[in-house]
Picture: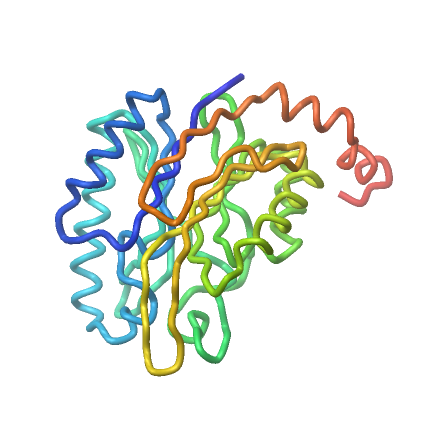
Length: 266
């Protein structure tokens, strides 16, 4: 089983989604019908959101959600994209999976809680029942986690136990962390015999204390722990091939899951 997946590397989109429409058309021409966006692309960056009235965020997100649904149906694609949802007067950091015939929403479970960047305190997400959202796409099992969640073993244990073939990882990485991310995700891909597609945003934000430079570097990692493809810091699109046979071969050669299963540790 083989599929093509597309990562579109963008900064926060303007009111018009003509640019995204253009990229989705190019994805379709390339044979990719699974498309992923980075964090804070459909909405403004977190530090900006903190200063925007919730009613404005609600209106913006509702329009974005409808647009993702329309794109999915129009082009017969599945779009995975982070989105801020407004429910019962509270904001939730979430992800939409817009498919041609239905749409699904997942709350992020573990959020950044640094003093200078505290999503955990700002959003109303429920951290209970931590799990990795998983769905089937053309015969392959696909999981979704945020970039920050990639640091926690719990998600990878779930991916291994449930036999995930591909993990989609929208991210918002900054602060000269590119090399560290490559090492982390090459290792995660190898130890879990899984493809990882990390989609990072681009752009800049500056406040009195910090300057955020979102460097892109969107990348695809193979089950052998190899960096297969990557983008630079500019707007662009990555098309990657996901080979189910290579996943099966990696699992057979390494046997990490079998080792745990034999000892009833998984």
